[in-house]
Length: 206
Ligand SMILES: Nc1ncnc2c1ncn2[C@@H]1O[C@H](COP(=O)(O)OP(=O)(O)OP(=O)(O)O)[C@@H](O)[C@H]1O
Ligand SMILES: O=C(O)C1=C[C@@H](O)[C@@H](O)[C@H](O)C1
Ligand SMILES: [Mg+2]
Image (cartoon, rainbow, N blue to C red; front, side):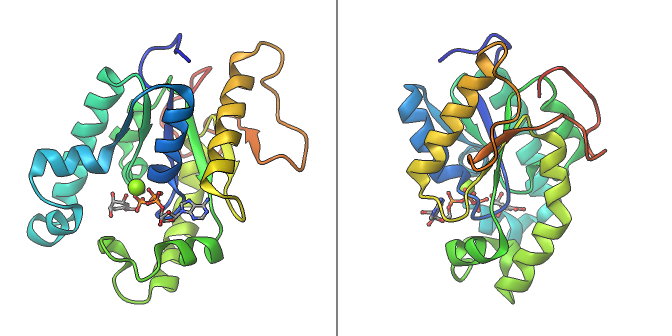
């Protein structure tokens, strides 16, 4: 699969436990493209894990590294790109997504809590994991919706099923006349960009 808009085939967003890294790898394999995760790019640049960046340097320093990593990846990476769960909170990072194909992997509280377990390696989940996940979901869901071209529900679906749904949704976007919301009961829907009011710019394709 190639892009006519340049940049990644798809940019995956969603909260911790949505499956961006897991599904992103499977999707890249299925499409025969490479996979890049902004968390891994930040870790490579900093020379230490995300958790240590938060502890040693603070969240603001992490977000600055993340913004730079996302900007480079959007310019240079033509495979599947997974973003860190909080990357789209940064208005500058959100603005960079304009014109890219953004896939929101949606997960509900119950599945998200099961998937993150004790929250190891996820500094923002320290404390009461369920309460933290709920707070992040409540705060962030409108932001993810605001940047999404395509939304795929992941609750009760295996990573393989989710990857297949994303691939199918991307094909629909590539097929003129088929880029309308899918029938109810399927796992994905196309979404009007910027509908939440969180996006900073509007474009024909996000
Ligand atoms: N659809 C799914 N069904 C069941 N388990 C899943 C699913 N997607 C991911 N998982 C599991 O949930 C855990 C978290 O997944 P993953 O690390 O891919 O999430 P993420 O969205 O990349 O999170 P983060 O924002 O913290 O990087 C992993 O153990 C993964 O195997
Ligand atoms: O949701 C978040 O804010 C985060 C998600 C992870 O991917 C990492 O980027 C980091 O743990 C912060
Ligand atoms: Mg991840």
